[in-house]
Image 1 (cartoon, rainbow, N blue to C red):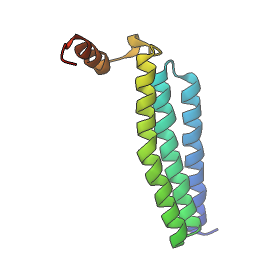
Image 2: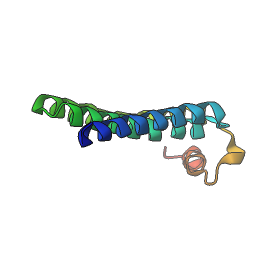
Image 3: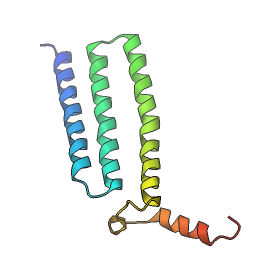
Image 4: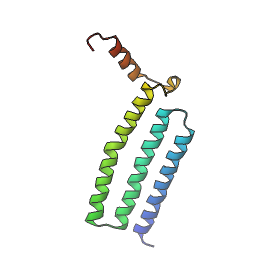
Length: 118
């Protein structure tokens, strides 16, 4: 076995661990916001590690550009999707407010509702 093959194996195992951690977090965490956090952070990192493993295994320009495009779109869409899902869950009252440390969105909504110019 070469060093590149060992690195690919380690990266795939790290990716599998991160994906497993995300799945466990989605099942175990108590509310929508923490589940969203568990679903997005490790999944993006897991995808990045498996894509790095693909680049190490097949180091061609075509693969590299495809991997860069995939990672770029993931990094652009995943946080925005989680943000919009979190706001929708908050506004539809599917959030456990007792678990919130700071409720900035609630404050902003209350200020907007009191502002007659809005």
